[in-house]
Length: 432
Image 1 (cartoon, helix red, strand yellow):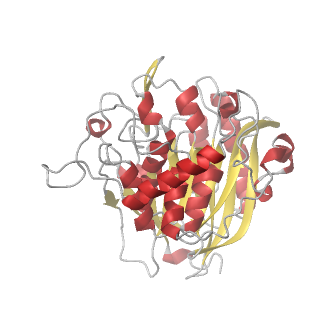
Image 2 (cartoon, one colour):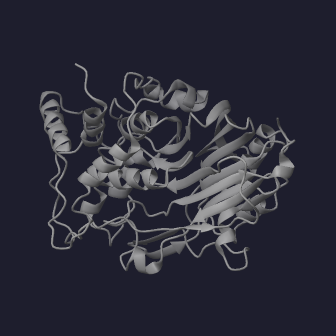
Image 3 (cartoon, helix red, strand yellow):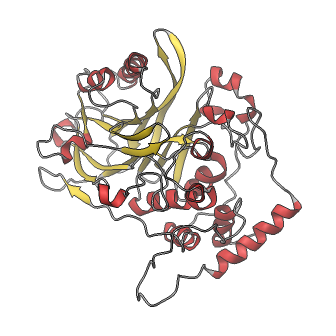
């Protein structure tokens, strides 16, 4: 039976949600004036969709898989997103998800749906863009790129031990709406994500209906698979708006370190701007975590740089690299990128007073081992071919609060980074 795009949108948002009731949490703050008004009620169509979803759940319950076993059948990966090595280890993820029959949805309607689910939560933090333009307006609209480690659901609930974050704040039925709200608020042309373990039931079906084309590349041995009731492996995901860009080439890269294949991956895609016909390469990665693995990360970074050197034809194609590098600016891997023959600069240095210093943090959390405040996330770009027009400022310490991240206000332990890029006019002749 045909359902309207609105109802399908609601059903997708609420497919694994028991309803709009939530466990006790912090007292709600009103989202809209006047202050005397009560909390904004959930939209009727959302409640109707929840009721329908509950009926469907009663007639056909989802399979739950124990620790280390398989995953929900919803989590099948596109064959084209896996190389032969990863496919051999995850053959169950080779079923193509069918979203072609789904109608497009209005991003404003989806944002309303998200806010209806979040109606008892504190409001989203206000962040402003900083204008970094050194010249006049570009002849073409800027390319907005968003980088974000969104925190894998299985890791957030099962492994990361965020001791100051209430478990209620990590519930997926609401946390996914916070993630979507952040994405919809900034409307990126290109979206680079790490720790994605809800690609096939959330991000792919919803973002594809918003006009994005997506690619997912899971880790070969994701730690999510060790968590009971997991949703499959986490990995990197890359989305771009199809009305702005055309895919020219795509490569899934399993990173090596000292000739050994590792558990970390990258996606690199060459895109062509439909308006200007200019080409550029966009890459997303997530390097090895933890202290003591600095040399390993350095080797992974060198391998990624070599791959990108080949893909960009020796830096002839402009390049943007997004990632959680799990490395402070003092590490070797950072220095490799800063001194690479690809002529890369880190976009967020431009927010500093001298234009040469990275932000003081991109992640801030409290675990059982103590408080961790680090700069680990970066957006690198070809400084000769591209300019940063603006960058989204970071959350302040006051906004983050004493319990740090994640929280009822913010869904991840990492902050999203967003930049607007434009091509430098003098680089027009590189690839036409």
